[in-house]
Structure formats: C-alpha cells, structure tokens
Amino acid sequence: MFQSIKKLETLPLQECQSYKNKKGRIINISSAHGKNPDAYKSAHCAAKFGQGGFTKVTALENALNGITCNTIMPGLVRTELIEKQLPVRVEQDGTTVEEALNHHILAELGIKLLEPSEIDCTAVCIVTVQQPSLVKK
Image (cartoon, rainbow, N blue to C red):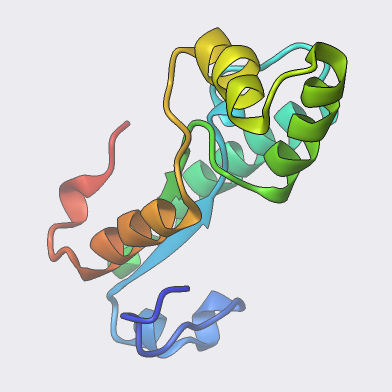
C-alpha cells in the first residue's frame, strides 16, 4: 500500500519533518458511513462520524502550518467485512457468491464494489497534488 510514497510519518505532528517544513498532507481513510449512516451499524457509523470530526479539527489546527487534512470516504470496498457477509447470503438464498453480491449488496445500494487499490490511488493522488485547495468543505 502507498508504494509511491517514500516516507510516511506519524503523530505527534509537531515532530514530523513535514510540519517543520510547513507543508504536508494528513489522510484519513473512513467510509461513506461517516456521512450517511446505515441501520444496524451504530458503532461503525459513530466511529466514522467521529473520524470525520477529527479530520475537520486537525485541518483547522494545521491550516496555517501548510498541512492539509483530508478524509477519503469511499462507498463499498471489498474488505474482510464484505467477504464474510457473502457466504451467509449464499446460504440463505442458495445462490452463488456473485449473485449474492450483485443482488443483496450492490443492487440495494446502487453502487459498484471498489477494490482497496482504488483507495490507495486516491490517497497517492492527494499526497502528490500540489494544490492545497483540494479540500471540499
């Protein structure tokens, strides 16, 4: 993941070279549930809403230091959580994994399933872009 990024630094931010150079990017990877909650996922949605708030505060606290902070909020991503849901749906319906994915997950949401590498590419794009005005309010 993030093979294009030569060096990743972690908090405390004030000790990072990017902070001292007054430039840098902080990228949080969340989920669409940080903006649009879903029934029966209260803990997950609460955590994602909290992460969104953390991103906004971090952006405000570091804007004058040339550090941007963004959250990537993808829709449905092929993760272990999704992969574990599919066999249950297959058993309930007597369908194939592909049919369960298309009927129960993708059709209900009206979206496509993203691969983790697509999220990686988005993060690399944010890190390498030179315009700090990339942030959507």
